[in-house]
Amino acid sequence: MQDSSLWVPVLAVLAISAAALVNLVGNQWVERSATATAALKIVGIAVLAIGGILAAGVSSLGRLVTVADRTPPDHGWMGFLAGVTLCILAYKGFTTITNQGADLRDPERNIGRSIMISIALCTVLYLLITVAVTASLTVPQIIGARDYALAEAAEPMFGSWGVTLTVIIAVVATLSGLIASLFSVSKLYDMLRDMGQVPGLPGAGGHQSLYITAGLAILMAAFFDLSQIASLGAILYLAMDIAIHYGIIRRLRDDVNAKAWIPWVAIVLDVAVLVPFLLLKAQSDPLTLGITAIVALVIIAAQWLTVRHRSEQ
Image (cartoon, rainbow, N blue to C red; front, side, top):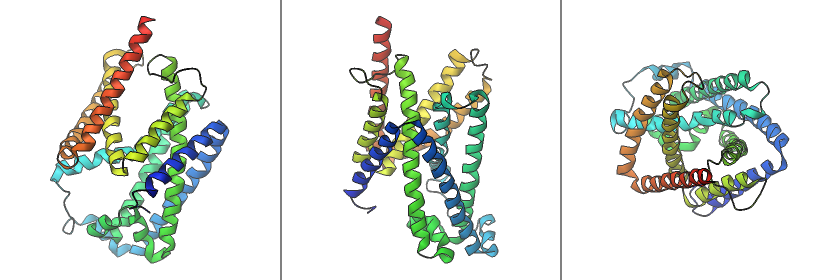
């Protein structure tokens, strides 16, 4: 179904709706499902990756340290840095932890610890996947396999079951990621709405932040493909990251005892990957870039009007 212009958005909308329903049931369902699905994802991906490494054999691992048969990235270093922009999205899941910090026991101790554990787990899994795929497949084969590259690498050991297992893990990862993200983002939106920083729906409603978040996600899934959503998300996320770090340096440095060099380094690194990404996107996909700019302007205008209305009151 992945090439269908109808079924992909329909299934995406159904997935988001199902994740929103789980969130409406309550926090305990979110916590239980997150724990179970996280374990399934970690174990499943690790099994596939290790299977791919074993199938490739020790001799094939020598390809990882040779550069003679490596295909350089498109557009050289510019293309490489632009690719890193999308890779950042793979690690941004730890913001789920920070957004629901109020629900953690002993948050001052456990937020930092949880972030480091989640990043470490992601890094180990991604390295295993990289070793398995690059030891088994050539660059053209990886490009051809795309989302099923790991299944292709593990095929000698798992056969057609590798594809089935990859699909199952992908579905579980998508649904659990949606459930966790809708929970954390709607909690953050609730906090910002209570502070008068963002607009809300007319009238009172205990779940209006969830409705807003799920509704916007459904619009994105219905009208954009995955690469467009990833590009839009990466640009907005890095722009937000730069703005927050600058705000910490300018206004909150003393309040949070921040070391100024840390946010400055983050800003430099964000700019170093965001600028090449914007330049290449302007050449290959100006429509997505234009839509992203419009979305950013709408966000800024809505927030400015909300804060101004709050100030007048």
